[in-house]
Image (cartoon, rainbow, N blue to C red; front, side):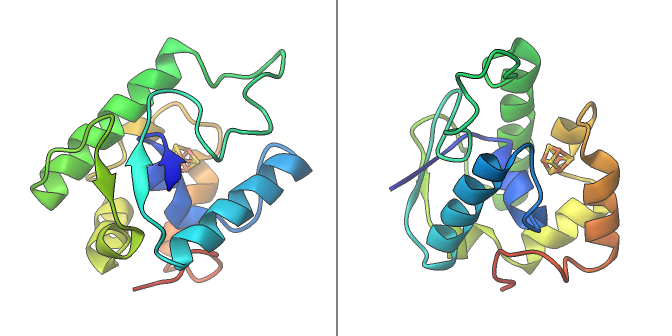
Length: 140
Ligand code: SF4
């Protein structure tokens, strides 16, 4: 079971292997590989499997209110997109969520309120505009 926080349901579709550190990139790659294998996901509050290497770092933002707000925003918009209420404890299958509909909504910005103050936003804009070609999550 993949523990995943809300806004990482967005980050997963633009991950190209780059991140905050080598360890973070390694952990993120492992999670994406599990998503590609369609391992079930469960929504958690706060740090998740992707955060594993950085959540206890002195400058970690994993526990900050603004990041928790990102999770809430992402879950609300993805819920509206899918017609299924997603909250902490919800379980879902990667292959059911990470479809063309999800990527299109991402590219059109309709599920990206969570990205507003993110330092990676310009990079993710470029990745989406490029059709997610360089991303590691399988395109479905
Ligand atoms: S802009 Fe930030 S929060 Fe949004 S998908 Fe990219 S990395 Fe994730």
